[in-house]
Length: 291
Length: 263
Image (cartoon, rainbow over all chains, first blue to last red; front, side, top):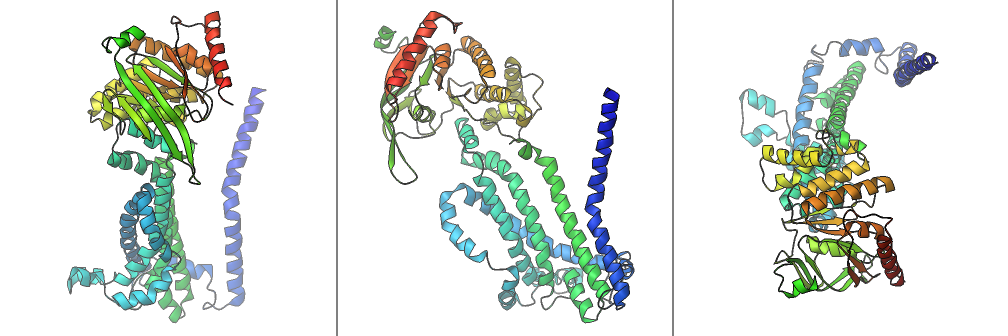
């Protein structure tokens, strides 16, 4: 009897695992099938290249494309750009969020101002940002005017950094404020009775308690920063990056490169997201299990 | 007992003194709520004082006042000879809800107070380890709060308070969220601990029985605004028997007093 039951149970387990593996790939397979059939029917690679043509670009990521560098090198430049804008946003948004979440005064002082910029889409900043920064880059900021460093930093336009910064800033800020605000008051009271001062309350209670929420903000912020990238790379003065590659490929009717670029954006975005999910699972197990 | 107090507090050291304490809160819609009215109370070293009263009698507020978490609207409040503006290092507090830091394991939680006091890691872990052993939590040092039952969590919360070797422990319905069986067990083991250690305890509870079982003295409070309507010494030997007739008499007396004053 026991044996029969345990066999039934393990059968069920295999079935569930199989289901968990099969279900998520059903729709993508149908999608790829429809794509391939349509491309054969349409038979015009400017409108819809076949999967094979796109795979040809994707499987040779180090091959020079349209004489503006390889797929990998363009993705790399884009990641550098996003990283700079994103890290700047995190460095400002996290401390600001913790302070606003903790102090009623700071909240009253700043929230009206901050909220008035929130509805403005990052793309809506473009004309103003161009008026301010033009095509200046971090090379002029650091004072490089020749050499390897100049070539590297001249690719990182201040206007792009600003757009990415704006995109990442609000999700990180909002989640930091929320994280600190939802810390149970009893944890603060309890630490006060043990003799903790304000700084210790912030560093040893509020910050660790808010960390899961802050990391969620960082994850969402990175996703949005990555999405803002394409609009940022279509700004004048851009000569590289995955967004620029897509835009340029469109002007010379290389739809296979356009789609390859889009897939590269998706893959990188997925990796970013997955990185954070691993961090959340590994370090913040206590959060989901404490309730 | 009264005589000793008259002898100038030489034998009975009054470590908590409240004189004419009033506390008024501002509610959400800006009307004021009178929580405490003219509280006069002295608590001596080594007493186990239980505060009982109906909901809204301000007993928790009174406790938080003594602990320095809130300030009185009017009156004088002295603990260990000092005016209380914030929590003092001689006192610890245990709360009803679980106050453990969920991202720290058990030993890190128990050692938290010592960490804030700047005690070196090795030393504070040693102290925490000893207390955990004493509280029957050996083997749970590396566990996280979410892995523990309600009773065990509350044991850790008490261990956390005791780790800083306080003179006074304030306890705000510490067993209130536990099931009846665990609650009885906790009452017994906490009493054992107290008989051994004899700290000054101020203990808020809803349960008259719990107050009579644990306290050397029971303070009865009225419904809002909270006033002291009874102050009794419990003349029962430790260990107390809940089925003893004297025990029953105390419970009956206090229950009647609370009911008469809670309308």
